[in-house]
Image (cartoon, rainbow, N blue to C red; front, top):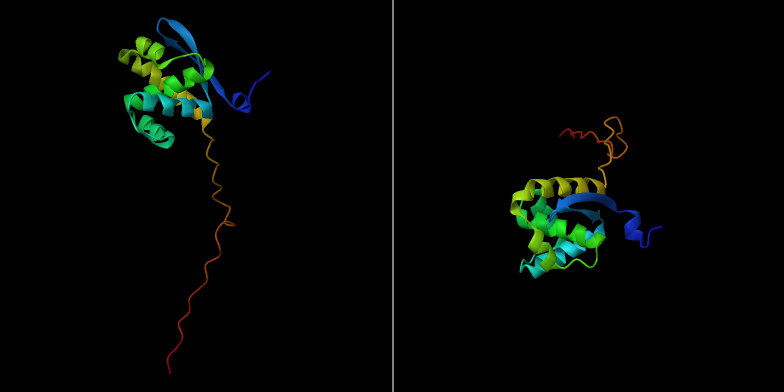
Length: 132
């Protein structure tokens, strides 16, 4: 049974990290944890900025979000433990884990119905008045 509402809407993933398999929990708390870790590293990024930077492939933002998801799954994780086991050579695995987490965490875009014109008001025809 889930302990918190954030656990109900969380996506679980697993990642090889520091020679063992660790659980990642992608939820809103993970993003907040990532923001705190960025502050620990002396970066001044908001949660939105971290997500944007990670989506554009910035390694430090991806590392922050991986830390956030790990911390969400294991609240006893410290930044020092994470730093000791973080390897830049494993960045491809971190990117895959980040991509998976974001596809599960962020809502899917609603499909656009090309036949549905109800969202747009009908265009009025402009007529010119004749000058006399």
